[in-house]
Image (cartoon, rainbow, N blue to C red; front, side, top):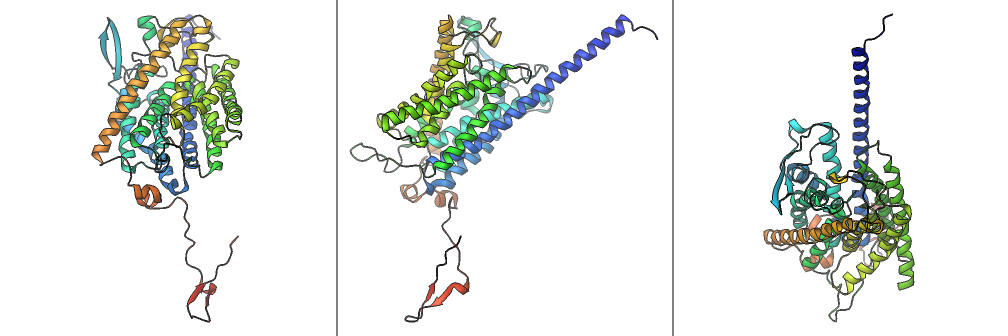
Length: 489
């Protein structure tokens, strides 16, 4: 038996290395897709939470918005949004850099990436496994943003207006800001270009996903106006109670479950064991968020309203979404605890002081706590993770660990979000209103419920149908047919 030559050994080693590398890439793609499936299921959670927090007379309308926004998001992102967001990101999953065209301008002698210009409609030349996985994962994140305003404008939003505005979110509003942070755009390069830490860092979307949705939500809620009867003539509030607390609680648990895909999936790698730290931090913050809300509402109102507890958990999840990979467990607990209190304070302020009617608290949950999430990263990132993030050497370190510039980069990202998303949402909503002759339904329809006039079907039918002939009897005195009610079990 002859010994293999050096050339043969080298080839064997190279083949094995390639096989290992291919296996790692395949595992990363599988993990990313599974995480994307979890995030997609969050649509059910949002539908239950929003419908439960609103009134029964609008159940079909609220559910339908949460259902159809998924389809609208896919279509808009496929045709336009994905290319704008990821068209200049470069290589994905170790493949050739097919998504390599970024529209860039030069300011202060530095390149500012604004949006991508490739990948629209997933052309065959780019439709690789890596690009497909990237599209799927990024799309379900975008759809979370598109869902958030449906809660803030619920119970008075024309369905046709919702449809058109949702296309604006999926094609322009979300993808451009997401490009700035995740697609290689200018916010991600604040570190490389101006020495601000690692640029605006948002691991899984506190600003990109949740703050975008929350800012759009408060703009729409302000522009569309409060629900009929919410504010009395003297300015005092007439509380409008949710119709199904069980739906709210079930929906919250579904969202908490899907959030593991949201956060841990953002490693984009089944080989990155940091995903266990991310998942655990996510779980801890969700718990302290709910418990923080419990403590505060008992102190403030005397009773632990379950809807506040649910929004406290969601606020903790929103807040930990950005820093989940970069902070210690105690910091995750503190971030969630603050979020659980902050969501109640913010929602009450928006409702009572700003007089903005947000039926589900989307502005406070996603907008306020999305901002808190990225700011908390700038404070608590402890330097244990993120070497090379956004092209900057060294790990991500926040203000409390010696890098004030990282906190400044987070502040810049928050300010950019407020200005860009706020103005774009207002402009698009105004334009849609002109196109469909107003974004709001008629007052009569709003009072009676939107299910029949907008959807043509009731969310909860009260029609018991015709009674069988055997249950009809004759009234001896008048001779008229009288329906005999028979209880059913």
